[in-house]
Image (tube, rainbow, N blue to C red; front, side):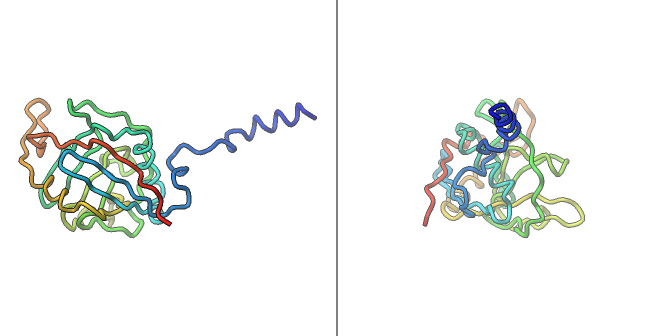
Length: 197
């Protein structure tokens, strides 16, 4: 009998282990809030786990692992987007834990001051990079093609985002990327705020 019990435990132990995909963070909180401390001020985003659970949990996982700390906003286009989360200050690529399913069809729109996942041409290639919409951007919503998944909105610090969006940019002298801030805008710290009851 003990051997059977041991075999059963071995078979089911992966199911018994706590998930480490972000879903374990403030379990049951459909609208967790994250504070982003930047070199230009603080921003608070309210995430939408109800509409975008995969995307929200993925973002929370990077926050929980402190993986966004010291990253830069590397793409800033006034009246369009402020994008970051993927590179450190030396433009080294930060590791991607996994790519996720594209939840762009969740009903949320790429509207001013929303937060969405950046991706490559493959619709399911989003990993860690995110962007803030600095305008209503219906061209980024799904239609005949996959869009960009919106998973929250800014609830504090819109004036900080406006300042970031207005910084001077250039074509990066080494990498040749356009829209790179001349003076780095750094994401110093990302913190999951205590749950409100």
